Image (cartoon, rainbow, N blue to C red):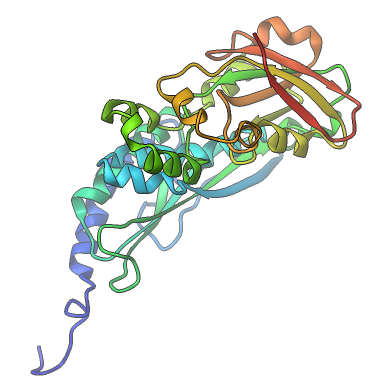
Length: 332
């Protein structure tokens, strides 16, 4: 090294450590290549996947993050859950199309690489990707001194899927009288946490540590419900992943000018009601999933079978011709 000349490592970026991390990730991600494999080797500049098993493939894509829930996950050292949340928020969106999640890529940035912490995040991702048969195809790990605060992590995910053109779900087929079947969530999932964090900050004495940890449960992956639709032969007209905007916004984007009156059960899960007690009651419906993380819209003849496809399956209501409004109330 030349005297008085600055190296990249002295500037805060250790490319040797980054290269070693890639090797660590490679060992984990091998678990995600089982029934599906990349077309070329892992670790190239871009990943490829052979679509020849599809007759008439359509590509579907999406990207998402973990939102401000990440701040609490880092504070409580729940890095594996951060990885699970990242996968679920992306894969669930792909599943709503009727497509198969094929490839997942991540973006992780921190001020200085921490192999142990990143490996734990990737481990959580791999657990979920393995469960839904999606390949960890690559990603980007960025060391950004002076840009990302010490101790913080930036986290984004990207998912690529495919479907046979004729299997893509078309919300344009929804008709008045069709039935909305909901499936239970495992918590707030990874949205609405700016409000949850405000409640926890202002009313900290009301919540125990175990209650907070329960609230931070990972976002549910709804691949089992979607596979249930496929294997049972039930044709869902549309499916919705209930994230930011709650049931009203996420369903109104599917209904194309139609509406629905929905009745949902009181959300009895851990300390959820303790959080909701400090939130504006109307705002809750437009912020949280309120205990329903997934909705399938089916023909009335398919109700009984659809109810068996996932935990907490229940009829929420029917589609009507009320212009573009989804109205939600708590049932008895």
